[in-house]
Length: 85
Image 1 (cartoon, rainbow, N blue to C red):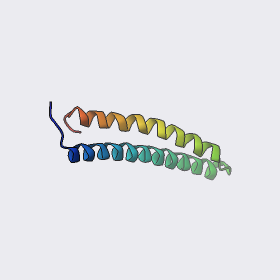
Image 2: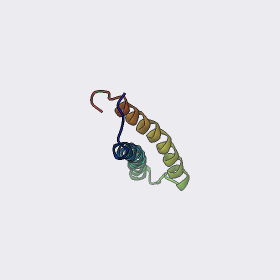
Image 3: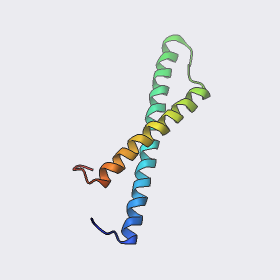
Image 4: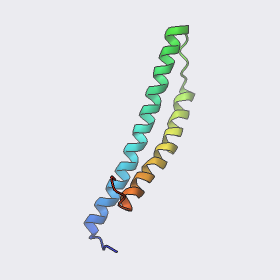
């Protein structure tokens, strides 16, 4: 087992938290962009823009959950030194 220097451990923890936050933001952004795209297509085809604040809030909550799970998975793969992470 490798013993970490305190600075190296702190840098590793900081990088892990940063990865989780960036993945959450990326998932939320991708979900919102997709919803706006399909709402725009619906708006062009039928004349109604179907995106409410409730939809944005629901997408944000789902993005936090899904992005958090994916971010933790990436951090664990890095922790266990899986090739490619």
